[in-house]
Amino acid sequence: MHHQLSSGDVIADRRADYARMLEEGGEPDAAAELMEQALELVPAWAAGWYRLATYLEKAGRADAAIEAYRRTLAFDPDDIFGATLKLALLGDVATPDRPPSRYVERLFDDYADRFESALVEKLDYSVPQKLAALIASTGRRYDRAVDLGCGTGLLGPEIRGRVDRLEGFDLSQNMLVKAAEKQVYDCLAQADLSLAPDLSGLFADAARHRADLVTAADVLMYLGNLESVFAIIGELAASGADIAFSVEDAGDGEGFHLAPSLRYAHSESYVRALLAGHGLQILATVKSVIRKDGGKPVSGILFLTRKPA
Image (cartoon, rainbow, N blue to C red; front, side, top):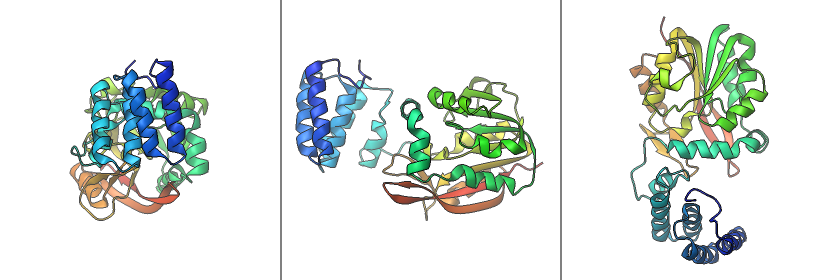
């Protein structure tokens, strides 16, 4: 019950519904008061504490929001709501190197059905086309491509024409179902890119150094520290392989930061240092608007790199 969006109590759920209506009507203080009443009935309702925390945050009551996010975590140790990320943005804890895997999995499982319409039609998402254009600039044809964090498979149709075998991996099973509907991937399987690069435990057909193209479109913003994913890429990529990926641009600076969107932005200098550390040669970079967020453009950097032969 701790993880349920419903409290299991009819009266508490009704109060929570009214609270949401008040918040949507621009009254976060009143919404928070009603959510507190709901939580008196079901004090161990993790989703309820999370909703209360968001209302308190919108009402400008940061200290009370922090306490409510802490309560969320107490009743939901797996952190499927991402309370740790919220606490980091509020300055209560250090920014984690990566978000909780269960949070990312739930986020995209819930988002799968409306993902493409929201991202492409409303947010002007353009990374697959732009990344595919970078890949096409090599003029190469690839024996085997591995699409990391493939999501609903938006990149697959863009690169299928120059790939003999295309494999896709994602943390969300619901996203993989959507990707399978496109019928462009030869293999689709679940994998968590935040884990250490034990390929036998992460990837089907786990032959090392098997891919001559590895892609990660709009994926790395759901990881902070990118060491683990580049270790995985290093294991998957054959000598001479091309690696194409995108990041949200953190601008000036040396590392990465957590944005209010709960996605991570990475500086170009951080990515360049990481690529150098993993022996990858940069062939091209493109700075571009990659999507909108809250009506505002989000800047990104696209990288085309190569593992030396």
